[in-house]
Image: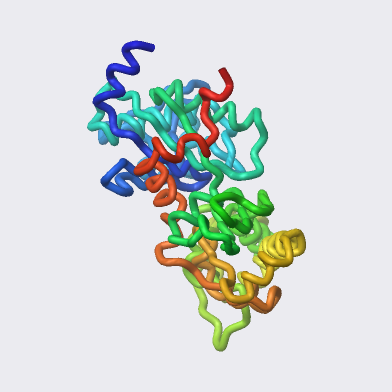
Length: 353
């Protein structure tokens, strides 16, 4: 413990957006210093991180291996639905990121602020604490993702007025209304970007008898499929995969309208979550939203036409914030800058002792 405190004096306090798809790391006074996929490649049957010769297979190197590994190697995404699914691999990933930020120094024991979904359980929070501590953190603080996203987006959450955030990540969608520095009401939904990818995979299998991987589905979604409303004209993309009948490689051409059809179900769940949250809010805060509107953050905010779908369903103005992918990370950075003032409002591992 004494050694951790001593080395902590020479460590960089960090803010971490620990996402299902990507992990972003901020350093106090420097902003975002790392943005890598939440993927780790290991030797099969072990927790030994693969060394490729060009570095450890974590982040970008590991993501390139998804769906392409031989039997001796497994590429793992250790978070699912916004929470830790593989404790040991998450620890290895966090340890790698902490060392990378500190120039691969072995003795780095920073204080870290980690964003978590608002709906996670006490057991899931304990897993975050344990993973971060075993990865080298000397003190761990947790902040709800909607609060971090709202601060990162520059919304006036400290004022007595409603600010509404819809944060669509890879594993969870967080819908929250904030006022006076805290969450007034919130819905945490475990339907998000990954479910959109799975919906596209299912559509291709059902309609074209073509098996595609999640990365291909994500590329379709980002490319021509990022559309939640009908548009003039149809974009197309060539999709390659394995024929389910012959078992041979094959290609097919997919239209925007088909991807829109595939995304109807997950988009519908997100719209329902937004409506449910609005139904729970106090009348005065609801009145504020007539003027303040809804702010979209996270990767899902880039889904073309989603703002129009939500605006039509709610009757409110809906807008995507600047740089929606980094909002949560920027919010954790704000907490870092004023950690001594904000720490009493954050959950910490020291609260359990």
